[in-house]
Amino acid sequence: MTKIILIDDTTIHIEGYKNIITMESEQVCIQCQKKRLMIYGEKLKIETFSNVELNVYGLITKIEWMKI
Image 1 (cartoon, rainbow, N blue to C red):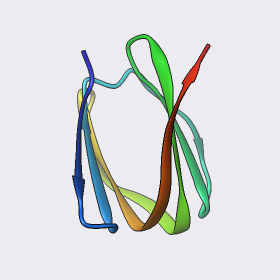
Image 2: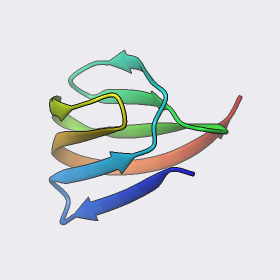
Image 3: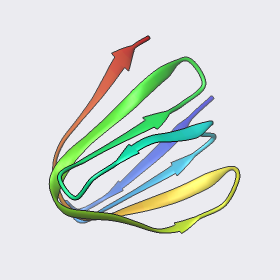
């Protein structure tokens, strides 16, 4: 199970992810347990992460799940 906590439009906390697929300043793709999480925005960056959780910071404009 993947848990997501959105804090305003500036931070997203993700628990239970598997892998970081792509990391760009306007798009981040995270492989979760069954789907991929796409995060779109401006000046996105990953500042805090471990093997089970991570935080994405920046101006978050859109979040969507993608089936793989």
